Amino acid sequence: MSDKSEPDIRQTAQEKVLIKHQAMKASRFKKILTQQAKKQAAEICQSAQQEAAEIQRVAYQEGYQHGLQKLLMDLVHGLESSQSQYQQMLARSEARLQTLLADVFSDSRVYEIVSDHFIRLHPESPQIQMYLPPALLKKLKPALAEIQHIAVLAGAEECVALEVDNEILHFSPDGAAQSSLPHIFTLSARCNILQARKEMYRKFSEQLSQSGEHDDHHHTSLHTENDSRDPELGTRASE
Image (cartoon, rainbow, N blue to C red; front, side):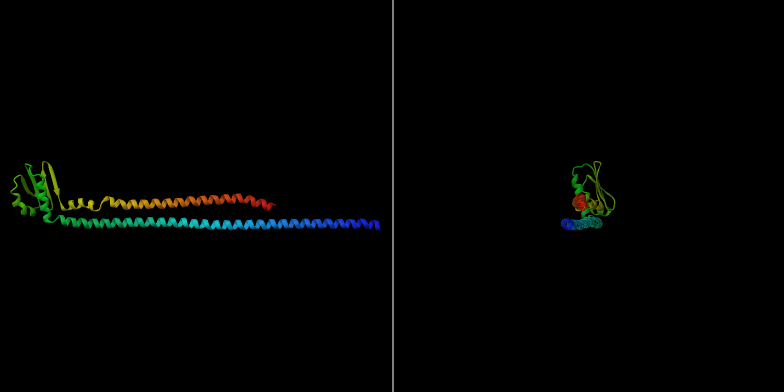
C-alpha cells in the first residue's frame, strides 16, 4: 500500500509543478499579448490621430486653394468690369472734349490766326490760293487784297485751306480736335492699365501654381506614409 501511494504522491507533485508551470507560462503569454495589444492599440490610435490631423490640414489647404481661386475669379471680374467702365468713361470724356475743342477751334479768332500762319509759311511763293469761309473772307478781304501773290477764294463754311505748289494745307475745327485728342489721352496711359492687369494675373497665377504644387507634394507624401505603415501593422497583428 505504501509502495503504491508513493508513486501517486510523486505523480501528483509532478502534475502540480506542470500545472503551475503551464499557468505561469499562460500568465506570461497573456501579459505579453496584453502589452502587444496595448502597444498596437496606442500606435493605431496615434496613426488615426495623425491621419485625422492630416485630413483636416488637407481640407483646410483645399479650402484655402478654393478661396484663392474664387478670389482670383472675383479679381478678374472686377478688373474686367473696371476696364469696361474705364473705356466707357474714356469714350464719354473723349466725346465731350472733342466737342469742346471743336467749339474752341470754331472761334473766328482761331480762323484768323490759322489764316495768318498759312500765309507766313510761304512768303515768297509766286502764286498761292487760299480758301476761306465766306464770313471770314468778307472780314479779311481788305487786308488780303494787299498781298499780291495770294488769290483768296470762298471755300467751305468751316474750313481754311491753302494751295501752293501742288500742296494743300487744311484746317477744320473737327480735324484739329481729333488730332489734339491723342496728345491728351495718350496711348501709353491706356496701356498702363492693361499692363497692370496682366501683372496682377501673373502674380496670382504664380501663387496658385505654387499652392497647387505644395498640395500635390503633400498628398504624395501622405500616401507614401500610409503605404509604408500598413505592412507594419499587419505584421504586428499576425503576432
